[in-house]
Length: 194
Image (cartoon, rainbow, N blue to C red):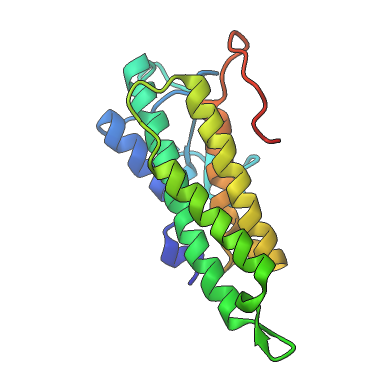
């Protein structure tokens, strides 16, 4: 399974923007828009250019209202959950194909426990209520999902960052969440990475 089969994160992010704003873009709390370089009409240069994303100052026509921002934030979390679910399936397949000392890597108890923890986290996240979740709750959910993704990357090792690996989509989901979901300086949030 390749990243192309999974669907590229930039195109999925563009689709979310279009769905929430009827073809426009949603501005982040800091006044930026993160979307594919193609959709934004800019060259692929910049920090995320090699991944197909661009971050530009929001135009006057970008959606900035609280209702749209909340819908977009929930969509970002759903997209991050989808990318993680696909990566979990990819990880199980990949580890099942690998053999060490004549035994599938999936037979190792620690790998089984790590995969079970990831599956439980995704199941619990899917059960989280979406209605009226504040920015601090969405931020905490994003942090938990980010930690879950990092477990999968660790299990996949260096393979996760190859062109056919899932690392790029997980990285972009983390970046998008950081841009759109991080509470501003007026919000006091505990660090949930512990």
